[in-house]
Image (cartoon, rainbow, N blue to C red):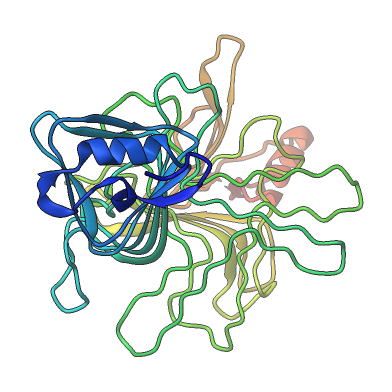
Amino acid sequence: MQDKGRERISVKDFGAKGDGVTDDGASIAQGILNGVALSFPVGSYKNATTGITVPELKSLTVAPGADVVNSGSGTLTNNGVMIRPNYNPDGMTWTTGAGKSNHCGLYVDMGGFGKTSFSGSGFKSALVGAALVPSGAGITGGHGVSGYATTPGSGVAVALYGESTMSAAGGQIWGLNTRSADNGFAAAQVWGYEVDVNVTNVNSTCVGVDVVGGSTVKPGVSIAYRVGPLGTFTTPKTHWVRGFFVDDDSADTGIELGTASAASPSGTAPIIGYGRSGAGVREITYTLGTAADGSSANFTSGNGRFVRMQTRDGSGNVVNLIQGLNGGLGFFNVLPAGRQVVTGSRGGNAALASLLTALAAYGLITDSTTA
């Protein structure tokens, strides 16, 4: 038997066999009681009768090819840390296809998270961290993987860095992928990722998300920021309520947009809106931006669609101050109509003549009257 002062010990020091037949439960419990870090060499350690709990401040290191198998009334509750080098519960290889659980070069399990996967499929991961935050925990949360960095001022500190590169044609490369799921429970919030920026010096330059690159060519399809359906694989697709939202009282300028050129032969548009017709055909609903002739602040709607400037009256009802459709124009909820032709005689009325001349100058009517 080993001294309690020894921190790193083997479960075999306490009589465990690891042969898959002998009940090693009592030996495992004694090992946890007498050390801070208990290691499991290669073997299958059966626990048939003992209820074992790993305390928060202790850890188990399970070697590749080793496992603890509970049977009968035996249980193992991990409230501490379990470290598993080369953890491959499904025996997955590059050629046999994905299993149900990840194959991890190094797996650190805090609190008994258990096997990991990506949406039920196994992937090969060099490093995996998992944390199970128990109900009623007195801390704000748990992190699967955390990165921290600091710099004395002249260097670049990156808390978490990843790089994906291609070595042959035909694959996909993702710099970052996250998945958040409520698993059917009512969650207070479900966030894909959060960017928390803390600035206390007015001379600092602050950017929440910066999308740049070192590309030397412009692909035919290149999108800096894309929002896909909330439910991509459902039929019909589940839509976001808002694709992009700037909260009230959050920014001096809600959205600032620009394009590479002020004007081009085809025109540039900082904003292009698309929608679906009744037949489900994707079409441009509006554009806002610079036209080919260099003019700015152009708002163009799609075919057969209204362009409206609206307000609300004292009762909260919507009033269409100006609305256009198919080349027509209307004011104050009047449906758009084409340019009107005014005919007849002015009868020598100078005021009427002036009014008709002014309306024609604005392009609202065609003055075909006579003096």
